[in-house]
Image (cartoon, rainbow, N blue to C red; front, side, top):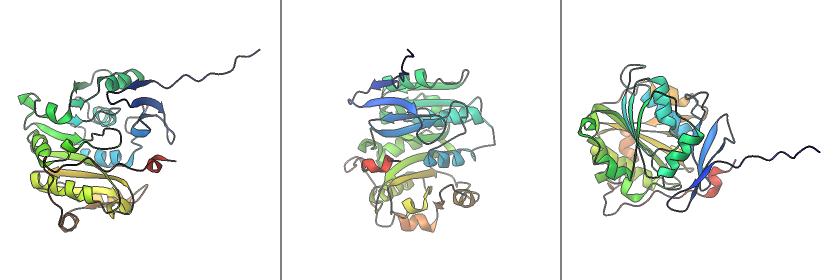
Length: 287
């Protein structure tokens, strides 16, 4: 008698807050997803690191592609590891890049490294600890030297409050080189009250600020991800509108007067009044 096929259980670990992190086959595309407590956190295609299924990650990569000269190594700091999607992308597209990743959960890092092995030879160091605390204590050689700082930290489906304030973004800004770029992933829904305050807060620290998002999300009509890109120096944005409009879902870049209007009336977030990002409805992640 033939034996029934038994599927292997998905690799998983329990995190410090009691939630379960699992690596599962992607429901929508080739590759794998890191799922934490039912929230898809990352997508990785081990065969093609340039395959960026999550749209907000692809928008981040579009900005990263314009940093320095094409293919030139970068110095990057990533706050929030996930499945290391962007570090893999940078190592593939810019070999020799020096990258630091900060992640709160050692079990999560161990799970990702075991289930989704990193390519050999990359200059990637993972530091365990709170993103803000570790960022404030990185080696002196990184201060003022980072071409890129990425803040994409979620506890479950929310960004913790202490990673949303002007004091936090001041810590990140001191890592940037004079032309370095900060990328922040912000999740928000109808009205965009949280996102408007985040953009106002980032712009207070880094005056050249733009926002990339799907059109309906940017209008506050649906829950989604907005990418803030900011720098002390002018950003090269001439190519972005056409790229964002190309799809697959129409997106746009808000800049200049649009940013002025976007943040009108929005108060800068401080440690004294910071709140976690809004929690999305579970239906947001349904097929």
